[in-house]
Image: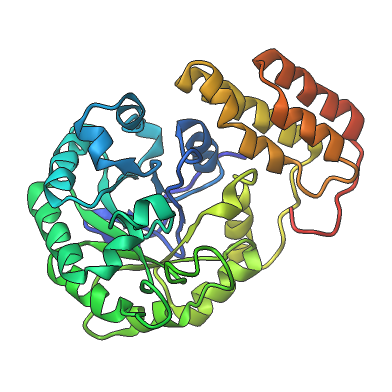
Length: 343
């Protein structure tokens, strides 16, 4: 069930080889920690990233920021993603992150969260393209690792300048570009627009891999994005939470044209327990429980009459209590059918 075959190489990010239609796990704060990445890798994620890390927190030796540097050999290839608005701090943070020996350094020019973007970091950097380019150039020059970037279409609907930005970032040495198909102003509202992602991919000046991101939440949609927009890879974010098996489902569909059976209740319970165990081990206590809640709330999405049990799961504060509740789920819902919504 867990065997991952070595793919036939179709493209590279620097020296990292990828097979046909690879799937990447998006970096997400308080989500893509080692406990979640462990499951995503088992289900076939081809490339994964840490949670995004504040450059300021890293250079000040902040405990949470430093802990996010924890990576493991079985996760490879894996990238460490950094964000910040001060060039010198980002360069220093790059040198610190390099010591953790990731495969890639990724720059976050895409986070739309107000407290980050309004400081000029994340997608806020799209309002100052010259600074974005200069920061990228200095980071590329500061490390021997390949540098990649994740960004958006632009700041708002009047400044969708991703085609120009992509060319300029390539010119200063990045090895791949991930584009989320929304502007910063859209946040996560509306539908992602992949037409500009395709325009970047089909730009004859572009020689680096282009990874598409935004709204891929089913095998059918993944196939549509590969076929219609020609991207080298797809990055999946929110749709993975509570569904680490989505990578397996998509790959199965791409290879066979068939929908893979959904996990049983018992399989979901076992996965939730495993992730909970690893979350508590890595975060050493209550933080591991609190940050696991968003996953627990979605592991059983689509199960009929689950609202009361879900509320108990996401409000429990003790490890043994959650395990006991999950055992109850096995007994109470083991033969329950799913709703028609995608799970």
